[in-house]
Length: 75
Length: 318
Image 1 (spheres, rainbow over the protein chains, first blue to last red):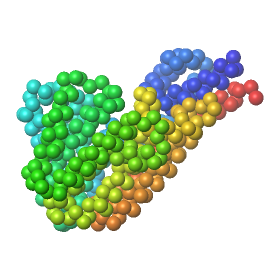
Image 2: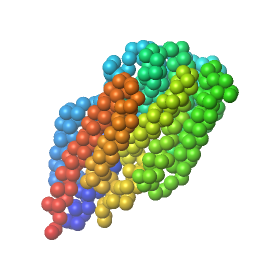
Image 3: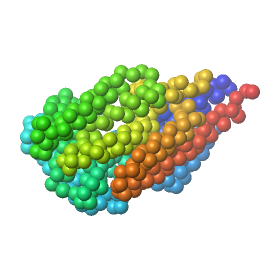
Image 4: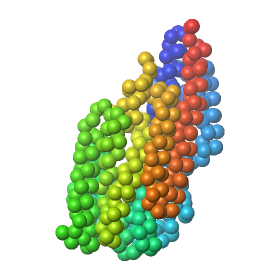
């Protein structure tokens, strides 16, 4: 069980960094988002996600939409 | 979308751009009405077709319309608005051509019926210059060189599987060389080919910075569609055992890319500082400041998510 938990945190970290759509899903419905990538939404994982999302929202407020919503298609 | 900064885009340029971009779109619709619906549907996936000028005046876009304007102002102290409007109409067509070709090369779904728009886009780009330059004019030699450079760079870049810094600097970042054509036009029209090399040096330096910033902002999308960029190749080369490129980005990649962007911008600013264009210097300062904030936000966001890895460490049987 420990080994599975270890890999799940890394798997989740990998997904949130590399998949912007998943980040949106995670914010909207963490349990469903976690299950969609095969991660069991344990209380520990949900708390970790909640902490990260709160920190992220504070950063977005600090930096403002002109920085956090830059359109990468403008090239 | 961020409001346009009036200190960056002077009102005269905004007004001229709005008129000329809309005229270019209207001319396209009039010339090829049977193709226009499909082409505009494609265009609507990239911009608001009711306000097409916003796309070109976006503060983070390549300064395709403003650079020739700033150059003319630096050379003459004034701009010929009719001439600049012609350049803008041409550049709009160039951009649409390049965007559609890029979509095709990147494998984005594009309606088949829209693809023949490449013909009128390319013609619209080139034909604007017939008004100003005779066939024997030096302009056309420069024009051909920039077009050849763009075509070769795009081809080589798309075929490379392992990009390093040299590949990026010498190939990937030269894909936008055609966007230098309106700058060439200004130099040739006013007999100032003596300043062409210094503006081209600047343009290449800026294009490198601009392309690398795009690669950083789009890194996850590029990775998803198996695109090859210098940044992603660097991630593949430096990621640790059992680490993905995404994890390398969080651990090191954002900081590495931020340092590269800083150095590329310093080079662009150094080259721009010799050109005598205060508008360009102000613009670069704005871009640098904004980009620094973007990178800081990426690094801090990654750090926020890295809390998950600390939980991983706590749960790990050591």
